[in-house]
Image: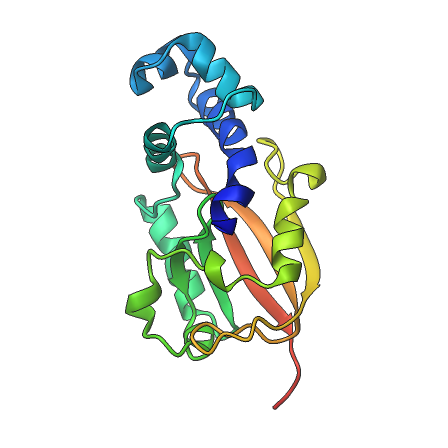
Length: 190
C-alpha cells in the first residue's frame, strides 16, 4: 500500500515526460488509453486520479525495460561490479540488475527478486528521500541527478538493509524510461 501512495503523485508527471520525449500529443495519448484528451491533462496535472485499470496500463507503458543492446550492457556493468550495487526501475522499484556483492546480502535467490519491487523492504529514510525527489528536480527530462543520503536498517531477514550511506543515480534508458542505480557507499564492518 505504501508503494502506491508514494508512486501516485509522480505517475501523471511521468506520463507527461514520456509524451514530451516521444513527441506525442495529449490527443494521441488519449487514443492509446481510450480516454478523452482532457482526462490525460487532468492525470498529468494531478487533478484526477487514474482508475486501477488505467494506472496499470500507464505503468506498463512507463516501466523501465532493458531491451536494447546499450541497456543490456548497462545491466552487465552492474552485474559485474565488485561493489554492492543494483539497478531498479525508477518508477516501480522493480529489480532490473544486481551485482553479486549485493545479491550475497539477500536471503532469497536473485532469481526470486529480479523483476520484483524492492519497495516493501525500504527503510523510513528511503521513503522520506523518495518523497522529496520531485523537489530536487529528480524527474526533470534534461537533467541527470544523483543524491546521497544516510539510511538506517530495515530489519528484514530477506532483503536486509543495514545502516549505511547510499547514492541513487537516475539513468535514462534507450526507450526513454528511467532506471535508478543504487549504490552502498559505506557500511559498518562486521
